[in-house]
Length: 156
Image (cartoon, rainbow, N blue to C red; front, side):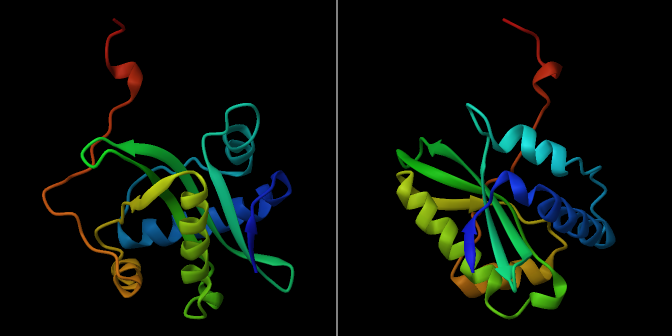
């Protein structure tokens, strides 16, 4: 079953995120991951939540999660939804859980007026790439994601 995540899911999502981060670190990702139960609660709820969460349950246990936020694509003049995290615990992979989470993310995106889903994939995460390709996703050539901490730039 896929449903909207709630504040009560903080510990379950944090546990899965820790598993996800360990998986990515084992692939060679050197990111110092900071997402946990307290940051999930801080940033996912309140007056201006930064994201929406979805969870997959099996026998009343959270076995997967997806975090999505919303933006705008000026190139195509349309709203978009950005999938920040999609993770399914290893014992539940290959059972349609990830696909169900992505389908619900698409429904949620449509409800918010978004016409497309975007996400990044760690370049060594071959199983994730195969999964997304199986959904019909395609690579965007000629674009590289970049980031900078806002405090690194001077105030105007």
